[in-house]
Amino acid sequence: MTSLLVVGSVALDTLETPFGIAESVLGGSAVYFSLASRLFAPVGLVSVVGEDFPREHRTLLEKQGIGLDGLVVKPGETFRWNGAYEGAMNQAETREVQLNVFGDFRPDVPAQYRDTEFVFLANSSPHTQTHVCRQFPEAEFILADTMNLWIETEREALLELFGLIDGLILNDEEARQLTEKHNLIAAGRWVLDQGPAFCIIKKAEHGAMLIGRDDLFVLPGFPTMEVRDPTGAGDSFAGGFMGYAAHRQDFTYRVLRAALAYGTIVASFTIEDFGTQRLCEIGAEDLQERYKNYLRMCHLPDAPGTQQF
Amino acid sequence: MTSLLVVGSVALDTLETPFGIAESVLGGSAVYFSLASRLFAPVGLVSVVGEDFPREHRTLLEKQGIGLDGLVVKPGETFRWNGAYEGAMNQAETREVQLNVFGDFRPDVPAQYRDTEFVFLANSSPHTQTHVCRQFPEAEFILADTMNLWIETEREALLELFGLIDGLILNDEEARQLTEKHNLIAAGRWVLDQGPAFCIIKKAEHGAMLIGRDDLFVLPGFPTMEVRDPTGAGDSFAGGFMGYAAHRQDFTYRVLRAALAYGTIVASFTIEDFGTQRLCEIGAEDLQERYKNYLRMCHLPDAPGTQQF
Image (cartoon, rainbow over the protein chains, first blue to last red):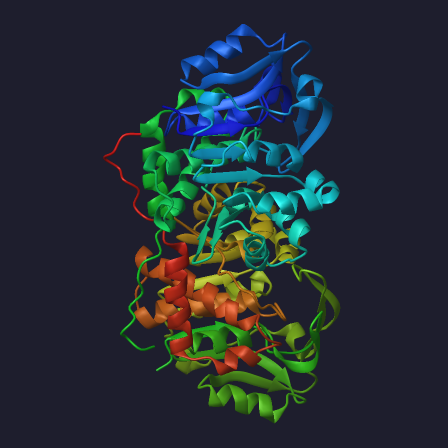
């Protein structure tokens, strides 16, 4: 049974960081998301590739148990992204994008996936996201990602999408750009006023916030010593978050808080090596061990309350 | 009994933020520190002012119970700082500094203060800090602050000071500049290798880290809606931290973690209004209420560990 689905990109990435170069490696939002969430729950992906998509990549995804019934092959070439990171690797510099067959991706979700309960709409045009959204009338939990481009150019369509989704995930810069509020709590609350029941704001190495109608959760970043390639961190985060919630089949704040931590933890593994390499190596024990460390590092003790200063 | 002492500046500040202007108001590191720590424990300050220092400021400090036996009055004018903040108010722009009588501040700690157990060396030249440090041969707990200027110009003296103190407090930029390490955990551990038992790294609105030989604590920032003037946030933070530790007379990691949260909380009040205004209004109940909120907002639940994904 596939309880979790991602609709997004499958790509061939060429990456350069201060630690090396990787050429034409497996990438894309749907790939990172599904490789992250498969650690928690069965997951399928809906995407499109060209006829050049290497057989070995397909095999890798299959071996990781990812449902590929929604992976369409079209005449032409696969989406390609060429990006580089410098210095502290805070920001990717896009050197080249070839949308190729992904350019007119207007996904029709296969019939067997239409009753999926947990759906992640990876970053794409809000028109496409809305088109997908309408194919899941019974989904319990739809989370959407977006980016600065759509906030600038498709604001109306984006606001329309907000009426259809349960959660929105975006980074601090995008949150400020979208809401025109510097304060991130105010920004998150503005998003809730547009429809979603909660908003996740990612702050890169500074952690993340979960803003719901009745909850505010602030989580520091997982302190990581090794960062070799930040590609896919955001989609791995979303995959860990949705994967854990789908595994628990529960969206109480208690579970969403733990899900936020698991999202952070999966992303902390992703960035330790190039592309999807590290993500393919890890298992449940690795996640659980890091979760225990996280609990230890974040634990704020009860300070004596009865004693007056 | 004064168990806590700060050696630093007393100033007349002129402040401009997007929310207004305050002229010649009470300021300086020793003032913010002592107004913050008096909420937890008796505190004295060692500093110098000129003959122009207004009687009302002295009265205010006395009324808040701050020991002024170490406040020397010298012929000349009081230290003056004129600073401005723009936009998100992340960085102060210094418009004018008049060191005046603070220029050759070489404090001799009054005899009755020499057995103080908790000492905060606010930011000043590491030569001055070392001179002060040697006057507390029996202090249990000496915490020092520093700044980019000394890291650049007095590196050797600073490293020498590290052999005499228990803790160092600095912001993320200073930590990276001092240690030449981008990773803040690595930076903190480098500091421990130079002598201090722990290092606190402040990350402004992103919270703070406590790095000790056997502990690593990461604390997200306290989510604040109102920021009108960030002046004094750092020294209020140090005051809350040291004040709580002095109140508890305990430096186990458990207490230091709570102290870090109290430091953050006191600073979150300071920045809500201009100068020392907010800091003078609050009491123990305000701190305790915010601590409870902090506990709620930071609480990462135990995720089921036995259940396999």
